[in-house]
Length: 264
Image (cartoon, rainbow, N blue to C red; front, side, top):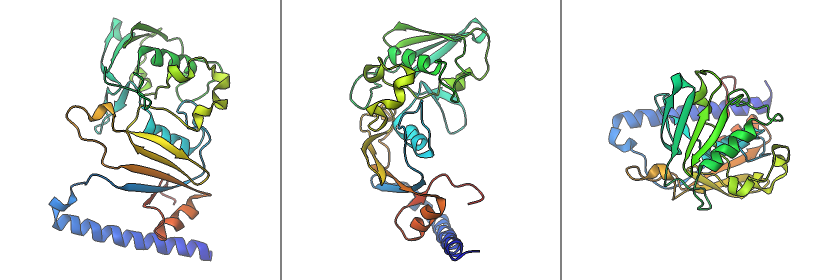
């Protein structure tokens, strides 16, 4: 074991002790466990962003940003069920070969433009491009997507496909900003460094050290019954590898480290 590894092990042991003390305190004072609004969370991540675009995300940082800044027609809830997200409702016909989605009237992009059926059609056709080899390349193969109205879109599947509901969780891209860009040109767009999404946080700053995301006060999922996101700001700070991120955690430079495995 090298000196560097020993430092990391000691840091992790220290963090485990702190976590244990916090857990005991929470058990003794359950009411004190209620989350509070506000504040900034700084997470150490290994690597740097390449494309802050969910369709061509290439690094772990890209994917982290995509999860915070973008959303899809549906999402997984805490129980693991697929529920409407940008969609207000959806239904199936023809034994599951026809899927129709209605988009929320209050859903907007971070620049204030409404989310429409055109955004869905545009995103799906990007994923159907021959050059696309990502996780959704099979999900939309042979699928026809049509705009029924400004906020209604319909998918026609060639056959019944059980996992199709999962496909509708794919984050959407804005056609009003990228609609004239073919898939082959997507990686060369300024959008990838200054993305506009629909998620609970919006990207406000990207440099060689970190990505800064601020709370989206117009996030549709906070209305009418839910409050705003608890955090005001999320910062993803870059480090060469997990070891450096863990050392930063031990020094108090970050609040957590992303992307850890059991081996870390």
